[in-house]
Length: 236
Ligand SMILES: Nc1ncnc2c1ncn2[C@@H]1O[C@H](COP(=O)(O)OP(=O)(O)O)[C@@H](O)[C@H]1O
Ligand SMILES: [Mg+2]
Image (cartoon, rainbow, N blue to C red; front, side, top):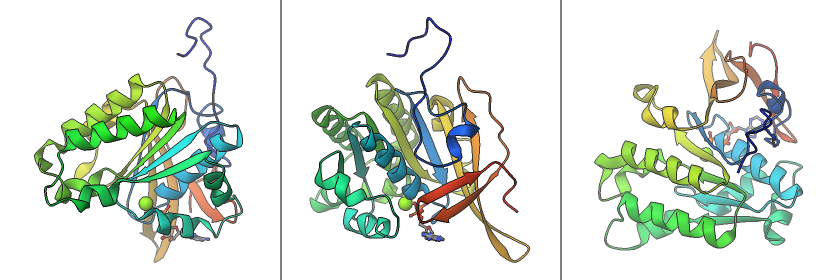
């Protein structure tokens, strides 16, 4: 539990250069953060950097993939200097492929069953940092797609009770702006990737961060050999 007597929170690093400075020194541990944005905006990379940072400090990290094949993620991360594979080999980071479980049987699972599975993994692994990537595209694969919003809120509340620090990644669709999960999460980080003056621009925005004074303007993002880096300036 957080020590609330002092009025000051302990902070843990996101693992992303420049990002901690935008959020009062880092994330408040034990809370759940939603990371959202369009495809290719850097959500998965951000999630992996967050786990690598934990693994460097012996915090067990669990990445639960609901959509992508973990092999693809590991391959994509080869381009960066941080050595994801070495942390996987030493079991400081464990990647779970729920995508194959979800699509394997002849019967589609319900959201409830997927959430139970997520909970079991986190408890069994004694994880400190968790990334769930990503929730939204599952709609077509579950028995009860109409329950998506409700179950996403339930997942965030469940993770909050588990005392872990978690990133719940969702794919942002235009029609999805300001959804229920934004209200129950402790923070909302939006990754941007859009066209401006015929050039694609990358940005990051702290839409919400409880317990933290922060600037919610969009900031510049660059992909470097160390992964994503954030600059405290406009992205153009
Ligand atoms: N070295 C790089 N330089 C510029 N862009 C890169 C680099 N490496 C990856 N990317 C971009 O990052 C994207 C992948 O980011 P990813 O974290 O998978 O996004 P998301 O999970 O939001 O879909 C790629 O589509 C590519 O556009
Ligand atoms: Mg992704």
